[in-house]
Image (tube, rainbow, N blue to C red; front, side, top):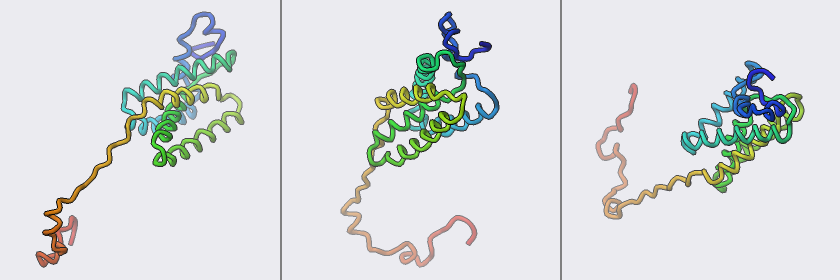
Length: 186
């Protein structure tokens, strides 16, 4: 096996680095393009929500879990690509949605649709490693659960009772006789 493709028999002879390097190799332009589009979309949400350090941890652990999953279930099948790690980020999004309760249900529905579509495609088309996809997904979900940051605090805007008594109910226009200033042409 050339380059750094993940291949169980080569790993068994001591080439353990293939578990990692395979995630940086792709079978062609479309393969890397689809992985990069998915990574850009899900990665942006994960980084904004979890933070850069946690995103890196989620990605790295998912990458390793996908690699070990391939060793376990597709030992003698040459495998490459980053989709196992990307699936791990989707797993973290599922964890985020579940931890957010009712507010996160829409996120869970959206993620499940994408995940199911990709898994069905993976089972229908030869040469796609669902072992890597599922390994990364499970790892991202399990690691994502404890890493989900707390929900943002709700801001409570109180009205000072003294100020509310002073409000006459007039608009700015009524008080000054002129319409309020607007940006742009009049």
